[in-house]
Image (cartoon, rainbow, N blue to C red):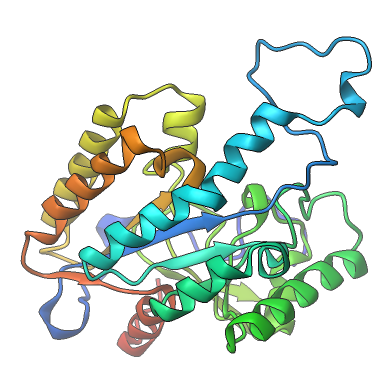
Length: 297
């Protein structure tokens, strides 16, 4: 992908698109995306913005910030699994390949639940930005291959850690046979991305209906986040009567998986699933259904 002032896709205002719909009369595709991430203790983690380092803090383990994230992998993820299983929802987990080595029990349980997996770098302490092309190729290829070994299926979707890409990322994902990518957060419908003479699909991820920015950085309460999910759904569900929509709910086990927040997620999902025409889908199911429509935004 050559640098350009606009993305590798056409600008397409949603009010000028031809209507299309999901299979079996569904109005809205519900896409639940837990982010399963590994952070090595040897790499410093960001604390709160008002915290200042002192002494040799840069060389010390960031115990509290790391421990919060480790809680998500020790406890929180299994609460999310329990809630989603009750609701009959198969998640699409974005996963660092290091999780396959460090926490294989999480992968084992997710496979048993029929979850799909998306590539999400080797560790969330690393971004693709700053890597040269071949180093980035190695990170993407090795991450997808390690997840394949652990789950029995090579991921066809990708979300960069920090939603970060370089000008090379889409080409490298296409080289690896990926079908879709979700970093761009700029639509409520899938669309086709031009990657030279190849194509990827953008599958709508959300930086708004996402517990990390809302609860961890913007200090929303769980009641506020629950209401945000419901309000997001109400609008998309109404619009989806005219043309299909995707609603992504993006989760982090160390944020939503704590005892005082998990109930808010369950209540929001119960509300959504009480409506007719909600399709509980995985990423690949959504993308394949979109491609079958033949729609080109």
